Image 1 (tube, rainbow, N blue to C red):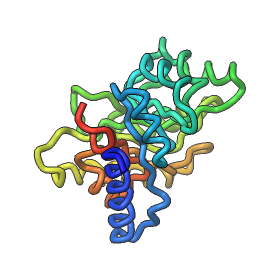
Image 2: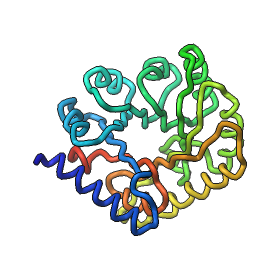
Image 3: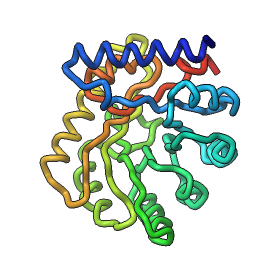
Length: 227
């Protein structure tokens, strides 16, 4: 058994253990295997080991790898510029990083041409980190209400990128705040909006993310090794 397969099995065991101890169904938590700088042969190994969601940060890498990997769906998890939307809308099943009205309108326009909707998550800058993208917490409600009117997008939940901390436990309030925000959005019952997903947690803090309600955990180095 390869190191990669062992890594995946360990993460899956963690998901089951933590979900059960938190009173959650492990089946509602899915791994997004982060493929940034990962060679295609290793991505194929991950897919053959059971990971069927691949998350790419960069449009250029996604478009290069997309035709070379079968049996998986792709998510765009990194910052997306408006002028690059056209390259990925026919390749990804979800965009995790919707962070502006202009981007929402661009996605909507491209999806209308394709005649379908794009599943999106609204990226929220919970920690108000000036070095990270995302909607401010106090602007999320208005943003969701406005973006939800666009026929080419389907808002499925929220995403956040936590700040780097020396102790993973320090990030718990960030994840807890995202879950609370999602619950508040759900109560508003905006037409066409589903708060099905919370995309939060990475290799160093996915345990805490699961405890706080994550449904999509973005794991890179714990699967593929350090970059």
